[in-house]
Length: 203
Image (cartoon, rainbow, N blue to C red; front, side):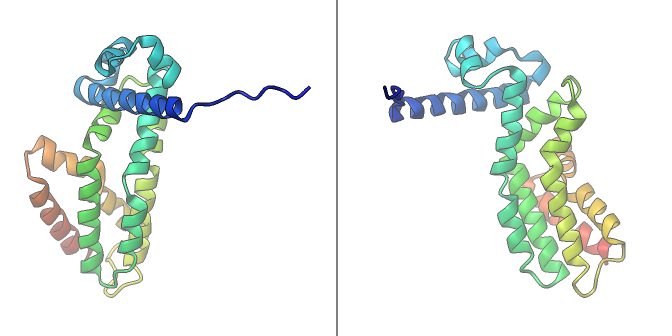
């Protein structure tokens, strides 16, 4: 006898996906505002308007939610498109201008995600691995940019590895946060100054 196939309702699946999205979005806001260690699953459930058991059934534990935030943040950053466009540029000025703008857009748009991750690091069971996973593609993109800069004229005055490290210092999430959040600069001002700093130093 043929086994009975279970029926999956598209509407139910869509509703479940919306619930997961809402839970992750509310958790991101809570983690960014209060810190991962101070937020409970009950807090997330209340913010999303669901029962705690729904949070566990839909997304999982608090750690599972944070992992999903990291994965969605990397996916939503748009770094692949930005790097493809940057590699089309043929002058150091144009590359650094594109890098300054691209990383500004990514950091501005993903600020709450970055804050949620940053505040989780001191209390997460494996904060170092979490940070590495959250920033691996970002750092790789800056290494790609450094290698591209060294194919142009004039090339940077530092080796490729040091060029990549300097790009991370200027255009990584900590550099943007230092100027915009901690020092109160506008995103526009930070973008312009970081661009000019990199251009001057790499010459």
